[in-house]
Length: 73
Image 1 (cartoon, rainbow, N blue to C red):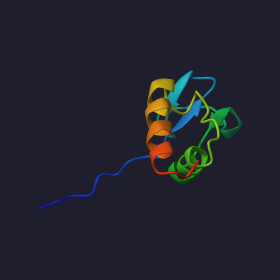
Image 2: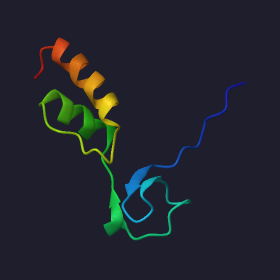
Image 3: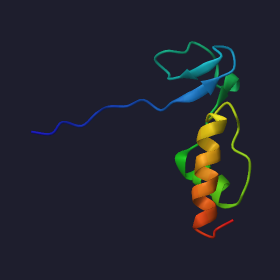
């Protein structure tokens, strides 16, 4: 039997200095950077820069290469 995984929304917290969730971070939303997966795909498709706090540069480089092969940039 499959059971759903309950995963909290993650964000980068400038005060914590890393990725966090509402359960792990006590700081206000003004200290958070949240980029949805949809927005990240849009940024990649349009050739926009993905914030370094949101994704490691080497991961972004691979994703940019992939999106270039799609001919969407």
